[in-house]
Image 1 (cartoon, rainbow, N blue to C red):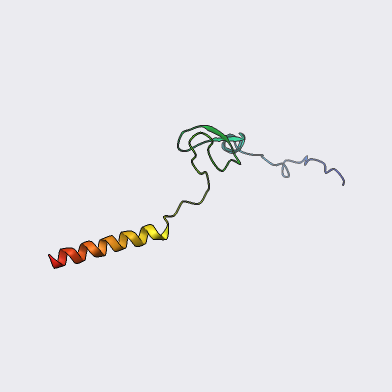
Image 2: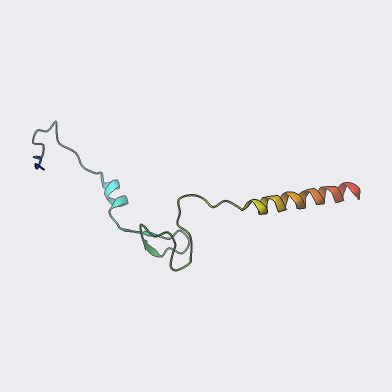
Length: 82
C-alpha cells in the first residue's frame, strides 16, 4: 500500500474536527444517566446502579398493558352497574 501525501494546496486542506467534535468524541468514557458513574463507552450495563445503557427505550410488557385495560373495563362496568 502506498502512503498518500497530505494535501498541500489551500483548496485541498481539511479543516479537521471542530472543537465541539473533539470534546464530544475525545473521551472513552461516559456518565451513567442514573447515578453519574463514569463508564466505558461500550458498556451496556452500569456496574454501580444496574441501569441499562441501551439506545432503545424500554417498552412495557404486553401483559402490563392488558392488565391495565382489564382493570379499566372492570372499573367502568362496576361504575355503570352501580
